[in-house]
Image: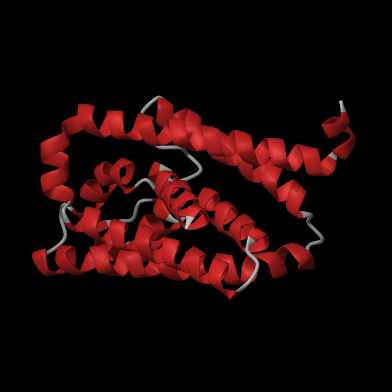
Length: 209
């Protein structure tokens, strides 16, 4: 249960649908009403597919490139800390989204996958966390708990994006900045844990000092 809660909080903090709301509203503002209604579901399903594939195939991919888990912990921790630092300043990290990744109006029916699901929501940070979670999980119960955490996060993506207009209006820019900074603080702590664990695995002699 504790692993499920920890992974849900970690992945949700990285995905942070609240921080994505301004971009989402900006990209969907000119879409027809029926497209705006179906887009949250399409985006959540695309994010789910990306995260499930990362969880199931990520470890094999690391083995193919001969990358040690400890190295991924350190690299993922540094990446996540960079995202957290941007969030603590109420900014959207460039690892998640760049303005040039937006799409022209005629192609906006494709935005559920790019840029919304990838890289805005299920970006490099979430993928790194899920690969590491897969390497730590042992036994069917832990794998089921991890998958359930991913489903919960993706369900929250659907719910938050579906209510994007009312949430943005209710929270305002100040409220969204506060939520982003809070998630950034949690994310920074997660990043430090990743880096510390990875460094101890790479340099076990440090643990003896």
